[in-house]
Length: 76
Image (cartoon, rainbow, N blue to C red; front, side, top):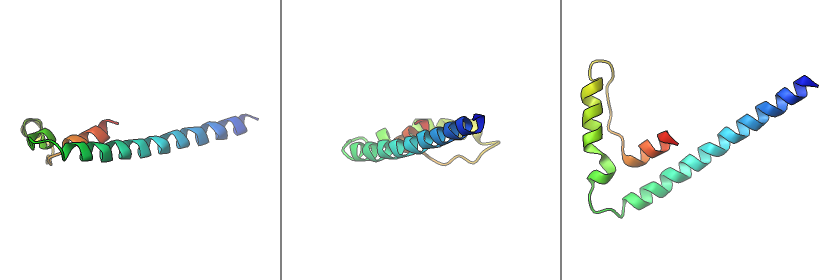
């Protein structure tokens, strides 16, 4: 009986995580569509954020620029 409950919980968790992936992909897609309409390109490229992260992490990591929509998806 306990194994059936355990199995059901695992299936539920996997289903919830898979559902979140699709929502996050959709969120990134909608964000990219919105960002294309902005006049200021720095709104998408986040130059200050990327420069600060690169400066803080230069000794331990190789930073690559991330855009607003990629960061939004990662946050999701």
